[in-house]
Image 1 (cartoon, rainbow, N blue to C red):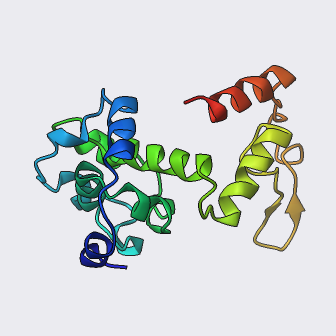
Image 2: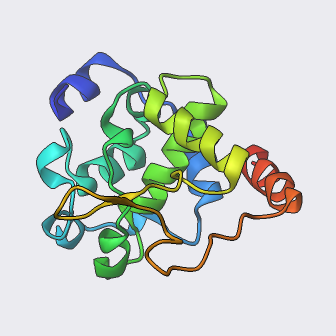
Length: 169
Protein backbone atom coordinates (compact mmCIF):
# COMPACT_ATOMS: atom_id res chain seq x y z
CA UNK A 1 0.00 0.00 0.00
CA UNK A 2 1.48 3.33 -1.00
CA UNK A 3 1.37 6.67 0.76
CA UNK A 4 -1.06 7.99 -1.85
CA UNK A 5 -3.37 5.00 -1.28
CA UNK A 6 -3.38 5.58 2.47
CA UNK A 7 -4.24 9.24 2.12
CA UNK A 8 -6.92 8.86 -0.56
CA UNK A 9 -8.68 5.87 0.98
CA UNK A 10 -9.19 7.21 4.48
CA UNK A 11 -10.05 10.25 6.44
CA UNK A 12 -7.90 11.68 9.21
CA UNK A 13 -8.80 10.52 12.71
CA UNK A 14 -8.10 13.65 14.70
CA UNK A 15 -9.05 12.09 18.04
CA UNK A 16 -6.49 9.29 17.67
CA UNK A 17 -3.98 11.88 16.46
CA UNK A 18 -4.50 13.88 19.65
CA UNK A 19 -4.23 10.72 21.74
CA UNK A 20 -0.91 9.75 20.16
CA UNK A 21 0.53 13.26 20.34
CA UNK A 22 -0.48 13.51 24.01
CA UNK A 23 1.16 10.17 24.85
CA UNK A 24 4.43 10.99 23.14
CA UNK A 25 4.53 14.72 23.73
CA UNK A 26 8.20 14.51 24.71
CA UNK A 27 8.95 13.17 21.21
CA UNK A 28 6.96 15.60 19.10
CA UNK A 29 6.21 14.31 15.59
CA UNK A 30 4.81 17.72 14.70
CA UNK A 31 8.37 19.07 14.92
CA UNK A 32 9.58 16.81 12.09
CA UNK A 33 10.80 18.90 9.17
CA UNK A 34 11.66 15.92 6.93
CA UNK A 35 15.43 16.20 7.04
CA UNK A 36 15.44 12.44 6.23
CA UNK A 37 18.18 11.62 8.74
CA UNK A 38 15.93 8.95 10.24
CA UNK A 39 15.28 7.43 6.84
CA UNK A 40 18.90 7.53 5.70
CA UNK A 41 19.98 5.51 8.75
CA UNK A 42 17.06 3.07 8.83
CA UNK A 43 18.13 -0.56 9.15
CA UNK A 44 14.83 -1.88 7.77
CA UNK A 45 14.44 0.67 4.97
CA UNK A 46 14.49 -1.95 2.21
CA UNK A 47 11.64 -3.80 3.92
CA UNK A 48 9.46 -0.76 4.62
CA UNK A 49 6.65 0.25 2.30
CA UNK A 50 6.74 3.70 3.86
CA UNK A 51 9.87 5.48 4.94
CA UNK A 52 10.18 6.44 8.63
CA UNK A 53 9.64 10.15 7.96
CA UNK A 54 6.51 9.32 5.94
CA UNK A 55 5.07 7.38 8.88
CA UNK A 56 5.64 10.42 11.10
CA UNK A 57 3.96 12.63 8.48
CA UNK A 58 0.92 10.36 8.31
CA UNK A 59 0.56 10.57 12.08
CA UNK A 60 0.90 14.36 11.90
CA UNK A 61 -1.97 14.44 9.39
CA UNK A 62 -4.10 12.01 11.42
CA UNK A 63 -4.04 8.89 9.21
CA UNK A 64 -3.75 6.62 12.23
CA UNK A 65 -6.36 3.98 11.38
CA UNK A 66 -4.64 3.15 8.10
CA UNK A 67 -1.30 2.68 9.84
CA UNK A 68 -2.47 0.51 12.74
CA UNK A 69 -4.34 -1.85 10.42
CA UNK A 70 -1.38 -2.31 8.06
CA UNK A 71 1.81 -4.37 8.28
CA UNK A 72 3.92 -1.23 7.92
CA UNK A 73 4.36 -0.60 11.65
CA UNK A 74 5.48 -4.18 12.32
CA UNK A 75 8.38 -4.05 9.86
CA UNK A 76 10.45 -1.63 11.96
CA UNK A 77 13.56 -3.34 13.32
CA UNK A 78 13.48 -1.17 16.48
CA UNK A 79 17.22 -0.51 16.14
CA UNK A 80 16.77 3.06 17.49
CA UNK A 81 19.00 4.61 14.80
CA UNK A 82 16.21 7.03 13.88
CA UNK A 83 16.01 8.13 17.51
CA UNK A 84 19.76 8.74 17.64
CA UNK A 85 19.83 10.63 14.35
CA UNK A 86 16.75 12.89 14.68
CA UNK A 87 17.77 16.52 15.36
CA UNK A 88 14.21 17.41 16.42
CA UNK A 89 13.55 14.43 18.72
CA UNK A 90 10.52 13.64 16.53
CA UNK A 91 11.60 10.06 16.23
CA UNK A 92 9.73 7.52 14.10
CA UNK A 93 10.62 4.83 16.66
CA UNK A 94 8.42 6.38 19.36
CA UNK A 95 5.63 6.99 16.87
CA UNK A 96 5.80 3.39 15.61
CA UNK A 97 5.83 1.97 19.15
CA UNK A 98 2.75 4.04 19.98
CA UNK A 99 1.04 2.83 16.80
CA UNK A 100 1.88 -0.77 17.72
CA UNK A 101 0.42 -0.26 21.19
CA UNK A 102 -2.74 1.19 19.65
CA UNK A 103 -2.97 -1.74 17.24
CA UNK A 104 -2.81 -4.20 20.12
CA UNK A 105 -5.24 -2.09 22.17
CA UNK A 106 -7.76 -2.03 19.31
CA UNK A 107 -7.16 -5.70 18.54
CA UNK A 108 -6.05 -4.87 15.02
CA UNK A 109 -3.95 -7.21 12.91
CA UNK A 110 -0.94 -8.15 15.05
CA UNK A 111 1.62 -10.51 13.48
CA UNK A 112 1.77 -14.00 14.98
CA UNK A 113 5.54 -13.70 15.53
CA UNK A 114 5.02 -10.64 17.74
CA UNK A 115 2.39 -12.43 19.82
CA UNK A 116 4.70 -15.45 20.20
CA UNK A 117 7.52 -13.20 21.41
CA UNK A 118 5.30 -11.52 24.01
CA UNK A 119 4.09 -14.94 25.14
CA UNK A 120 7.69 -16.18 25.39
CA UNK A 121 8.64 -13.13 27.49
CA UNK A 122 5.72 -13.74 29.83
CA UNK A 123 6.61 -17.42 30.22
CA UNK A 124 10.38 -17.18 30.65
CA UNK A 125 11.32 -13.51 30.85
CA UNK A 126 13.39 -13.91 27.67
CA UNK A 127 12.54 -13.02 24.07
CA UNK A 128 14.15 -16.25 22.87
CA UNK A 129 14.71 -19.65 24.40
CA UNK A 130 18.20 -20.89 25.15
CA UNK A 131 19.73 -22.48 22.10
CA UNK A 132 22.65 -24.79 21.59
CA UNK A 133 25.54 -23.78 19.37
CA UNK A 134 26.65 -25.97 16.49
CA UNK A 135 30.42 -26.17 16.06
CA UNK A 136 32.32 -26.55 12.77
CA UNK A 137 32.47 -30.30 13.23
CA UNK A 138 28.71 -30.57 13.84
CA UNK A 139 28.78 -30.90 17.65
CA UNK A 140 25.94 -29.32 19.56
CA UNK A 141 27.10 -27.49 22.71
CA UNK A 142 25.09 -25.91 25.51
CA UNK A 143 26.01 -22.78 27.47
CA UNK A 144 27.35 -24.94 30.26
CA UNK A 145 29.57 -26.92 27.88
CA UNK A 146 30.91 -23.66 26.46
CA UNK A 147 31.82 -22.46 29.97
CA UNK A 148 29.19 -19.68 29.92
CA UNK A 149 27.23 -18.74 33.03
CA UNK A 150 23.68 -20.01 33.28
CA UNK A 151 20.92 -17.56 32.43
CA UNK A 152 19.11 -16.11 35.39
CA UNK A 153 15.40 -16.04 34.76
CA UNK A 154 13.39 -13.09 36.11
CA UNK A 155 11.17 -13.50 39.13
CA UNK A 156 7.37 -13.54 39.09
CA UNK A 157 7.54 -9.85 39.96
CA UNK A 158 8.86 -9.26 36.44
CA UNK A 159 5.70 -10.78 34.92
CA UNK A 160 3.54 -8.52 37.05
CA UNK A 161 5.49 -5.40 36.05
CA UNK A 162 5.61 -6.49 32.38
CA UNK A 163 1.84 -7.05 32.24
CA UNK A 164 1.23 -3.72 33.95
CA UNK A 165 3.45 -1.93 31.41
CA UNK A 166 1.67 -3.68 28.52
CA UNK A 167 -1.78 -2.57 29.74
CA UNK A 168 -1.00 1.00 30.77
CA UNK A 169 -2.28 3.85 28.67
